[in-house]
Amino acid sequence: MNLYNSVYQLLKENDCVIIPEFGGFVANYFEAKVDLRNQEFCPPAKRIAFNQDLRSNDGLLINYVSKAVDNNWSLAEKNVKDFVEELNNILKSKGSLQFGSLGKIIHKDNTLVFIPNADLNLLEQSFGLKSFSYPMISGGKKAIEIQKPKELSKTKSAKRNKKSRTIKPAVFYTTAAAVIVGLLFISIQFDWIRLEKDPVQQQANVIPVEIVDSSTSNQTDTEIVNTEIDTETNSDEIILVDDSSDEVTTEVENVETEIVEPVDIVVEETMEVQTINQNLNIHIIGGSFADRTNALNYQSELIAKGFNSQILPAANGMYRVSVKSFADSESANAELSNLRSQSGNPSLWVLSW
Image 1: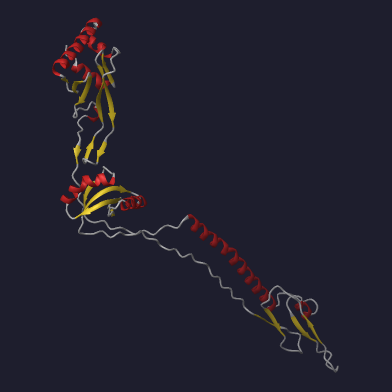
Image 2: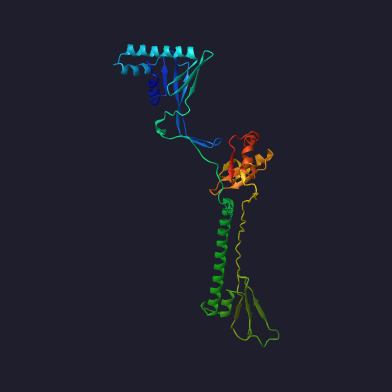
């Protein structure tokens, strides 16, 4: 009885199907991948492998066959046994056999070697999806690298904010002092402070003043009484104009306060722009990076190995690091294999820029 199709149908729904006293087929899941070496996209797949040591009967295959023979377990078991005997006879006589659409089994040195069908994909979610190759990327318009100013670090921003907060109290106290001095001058000038007893004596209690008493003019020596009282305002000065009167003229020097705010000088750092030889427009690329720092590190590794590496800016913001550049694609493809071995990077690919 031919059970090739039965094993095939079971592998679609199960990860392992054992043929008693022969071996077991195991289904392995593979994610979608990009083969940079062959420039090929591969969809997710369910590939088949064979293990000769899986010989114990788990009942899966016999149960499936029994449903086709009216649930006769004994008959199904006999059909499986006959199928295994038929497989062994073919391998002994021919040395190999084609196991349906799964692949080919070869008998070599008392060992069964399974070669799976490369085009077979048992994953139902990938039905209709096939591997496909993509051509070598041709460079279009050259990207213009935009120089961006480097942002201030958190430390610099904190220092700047701290300086701004330090200036505010100084401005407040200076302004308050100027207002108090002005109000004091106006109150004296317009007689807002009432003098109850001796006007000159009351005024001396407020600001420094010199008093000359003219009532003793008949005496030989004129007595001059100087009264000085310290005040907190060093910029105020009182000048006596007329000795014969009790009026006192005051002159107040205006205090000018100039506030100078420190200004942070922000040094704009621009990224280095690398000059690219326009005649060598075919490049063998070793890697593509979103971060320029990683690209520079990889370039340094290549230069240390003796390669004339360059960084090619891309329009999508990626930085491509070249291993070597050529004037034509024929030369690049000719050296591609050697450069993969020399650089230790099997994923090198050719870019026309």
